[in-house]
Length: 314
Image 1 (cartoon, rainbow, N blue to C red):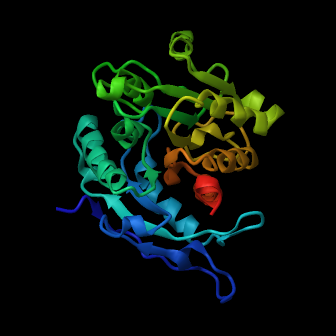
Image 2: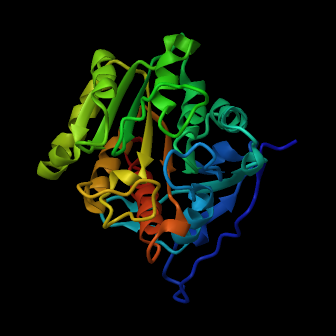
């Protein structure tokens, strides 16, 4: 049985034949053809572990819809290269408990990563970050995660994993001795308890606040990249609540004081240019909570900016 099911028909929205859009270049992919593309999309329609407001299960379809209408040209990098779409992880929406959802997502992510393809995961809630990245933990190589997020998401796992536990799960994993490096960019004051901030510090992690991003976004991304100096591979995650509520109202926990879309896009391009980056995700896009599609549009453009410099610039 296939790990994926195709749910979206890609088509550009412009009547101008000169307007090449993502809808014109994205092709359906399979595990067997995934490595023919610069990157492949993987939808994860699940929000059964969200701590706050639900709605992220609708994220993959909304992100695809808005990505389809975005033009492929970046002024500095030129047009985006090839992009495939594997579809959504099969049966994920029907998972009865979080561990089942993480298992299904982990199986799908492993299939992509084992094929040396570059996955772009479309969430879905933040609990699946663990499933998307845990396969990268190994005794042979070290893994670091750069997490663009208002929260640290290192809560202790109690009765079951949640959208607030993925990095604790990665740190505690027995695979490869657990996560080797962690950096949170865009963290908001008064959104995380002292206990969890101390946990990250004890693990040698970096915390870059939204205020620091506002002062200088280039220096803000240099800090987490410098903290990844000793790792072999890097996974990049974007929880859209890292954006100020003005820019991203359609998330589980929108709050004021976040970063701007422009700051996020610039930092993502700089992060993606590191050739150790092996995976990327956008999580917590909740269309039913959105206003005028702002959050989904921001998420779709974040994907475009990231792809524009992936692996040093294609």
